[in-house]
Image 1 (tube, rainbow, N blue to C red):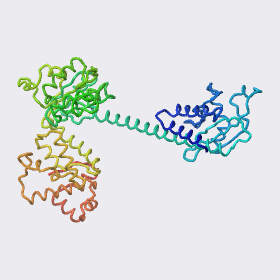
Image 2: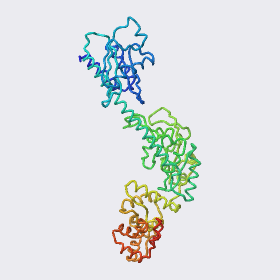
Image 3: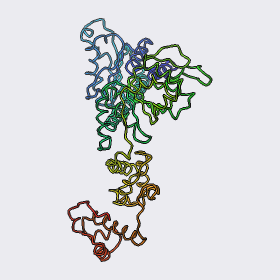
Image 4: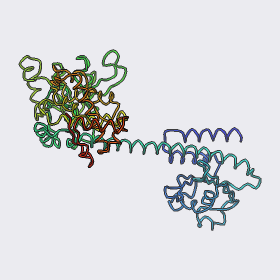
Length: 508
């Protein structure tokens, strides 16, 4: 190849690697070939999704109509794609029959090179050249073969990008569906009276755009309620953005809320979007809103009243199409009296209030939550743990849970991590649950009695797993059937009741 051909190939390669979509980039490359006088006309034919051939791009006279653009797909290009081998025809293949009938039509040479992807022809580059009796066909094949290879690389890159885009779209759709399923309020755990009342309130307010204030002690699951409200609304496909007020210094709250413009203050090297920007069309959740400083309270009140805000250092007024859900464990009424919280902001936030009860007031939910967390962390830590022993459940029920659901979740995760068998026992629970001061579960028994009780629980668990088969239970305990039979008689265990697979047991 001469220097001109190499320069042209480089130019085409750069055009196909640029930001343009593949089709306009191909059109521009073919037009460049025509304007340089390299071809009379040219076309790129590609295989479609169903295997059919279509003209993806064309340049030169005779390609004005869709029918004319697709005629190449039925001729020499189809044969080249089928065989995977180049073809050259002299004075042949005019694009239209009308042109073929013209007596003054110039003689041409048509050259068609396969576009190979992974060794298979997935298209063809077809060009018509002015007829030259002394043309160096080998040189023409090298030049247009190199061009076909460049097009193949661009096509491969585009398909990889499209596949990644499809994959990301599907992943995004799957994750959104998981979020919808995870945070549907019907999936919240608990059947106690106070929780049923909370569910009714969520069902009432979720489909609306009403501002919601969620109240309750720390660790009761206020964020889960907020997410249930969002994912049960018409805004479910829009962002759910959280701002934990207590974790942000007072000096940064405004910039986190509204964002800032470049140069707004020292260190503002670029524009930053605030939470109102990020939550556009969706829900903005203020966690621990009672910790908001007075200056930020004034600006938040303005946004709630006028649905407008400005970035720090900016003059542009932005609209805020955002639903507000706030949560607090603070007594806001007392904070108003103390001058720590604005009364007008309180009434703006407290349009619809949901109270999340503490765990000590929803005793029937403790075991349901424990089983939920047991399943969750067994999967997460890849363990096979079937259930909790009677002693462990007694200790859970007796504890007063000052840390609420968060404390219970941490307790179960710790138990899963320390458990080496298939059943959570009392000694897998943290020490705070094993003291009389914190749980009221201290047993007034001797060491011998405690050992016997533990031994009885182990035998009961083994018999349940073995469905009453004492020999199999002995193997599970790494013991002998004779020893197991002796212990069964000693502790008066009715092994027959496990034959039907029932899980009821005497926990002692």
